[in-house]
Length: 150
Ligand SMILES: CC(C)(COP(=O)(O)OP(=O)(O)OC[C@H]1O[C@@H](n2cnc3c(N)ncnc32)[C@H](O)[C@@H]1OP(=O)(O)O)[C@@H](O)C(=O)NCCC(=O)NCCS
Image (cartoon, rainbow, N blue to C red; front, side, top):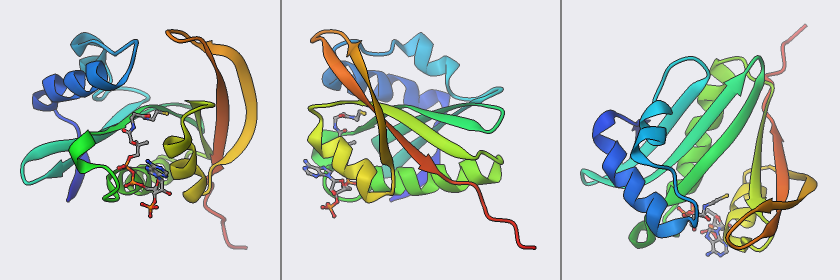
C-alpha cells in the first residue's frame, strides 16, 4: 500500500466514498479545494492503483484538525486508516503542529477504536453536532509536539 498526497485524479473516487459513507458528503468542488494550498492537506491510500482510503487535514498556526477519514469497504481492517494516520502525524510534525483534533459520532465505535489505538484521547463532547441523524460528537485530541532536547 502506498500513502501519498491526493491529486485531482482522486477527486471522483473520494466523492464516491463520501456519498456512500456519509449522510452529508463533501462535493467534488469541496474535495478539490482541500487538496492543497495554505493550511490544507489530503492524503490518499492507494492499493494496486485503486483508491483504498483518504484523510484530510486542515491546520492553522500549530493546530491541526482531521476533517474527513474513510476507507473503502473492501479494504477495511487491513490497516489502511492506521497507515493514513501514521503518515498524517509524520507530516503534521514536519509542519510544526503541536496537536491534532477531530470529531467523531459517539456511536462510531470502529473509528473511536481506531483513534484510541493511535493515542488520541477523549477531550469532550459537542452536543447535537451531527445532523442526519442528529448525534453528539466526541472530540478527540492527539499531542504530537516533538520534544526538543536541551
Ligand atoms: C473507521 C474506518 C476509517 C477504519 O478504517 P480501516 O482502514 O478499516 O481501519 P484499520 O484497518 O486501519 O484499523 C485500525 C484499528 O482501528 C480499529 N477498528 C477499525 N475498524 C474497526 C471495527 N469495525 N470494529 C472495531 N475496531 C475497528 C481496530 O482497533 C483496528 O486495529 P486492528 O485491525 O488491529 O484490530 C472505516 O471503518 C471507515 O471508513 N468507516 C466509515 C467512515 C467513517 O466512519 N469514518 C470516520 C469518521 S470520524
